[in-house]
Length: 255
Image (cartoon, rainbow, N blue to C red; front, side):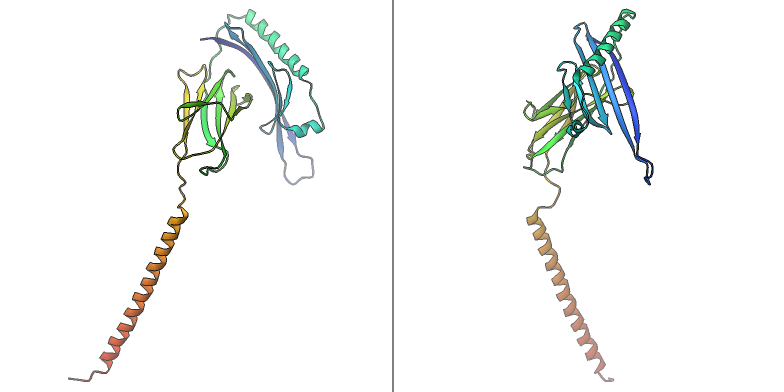
């Protein structure tokens, strides 16, 4: 298995609300940049990313080397030139090369990922929806996510995020699949990573709604109403019968 050399740099800022507010709101702004090289393939990759309150603002990828905005409203009052991010990753690259020359290039310790699959919106059979596969706490940031529908690989309607920082110098990533839930269909998110001895799979299947269908509701309501009316009629008959019996006993004389 290939090894991995990587340098990761994280910066965190806490932005407080202005004085005069009754409550203090804390916003967090994160800058993450990393560069890595795989051995023995010597494949290089890296990323420069800014986040506000866990929402990506923009990122620059080592391969594409262009600024990709995820919160376009930020472009109304600021800008960022991709070359600045490339220069930062070049510094990490030079530092990594210097460290490798001074070390025995032992393979980085792999942290296996966890995965969770869930729906973006409440499910309705036949209604368009989005399946989300959330992969978390893995290192290094080299990951393959594959979607399967009824055992067959799906590529249409699939999108992914870049790598986001997670806890303990690990990473997280999201993969999205747009689809229409149909009864009997099942979907699998398959994750492959160097920290896994075999693929990690998470299953999601479309089931019938647990709500009672309208026709069944009508039947139950009608049945309940009928039982209620029957109870009222029975109670009325018994009431008048009891009164008649009591009246007859009062008019009887002594023997």
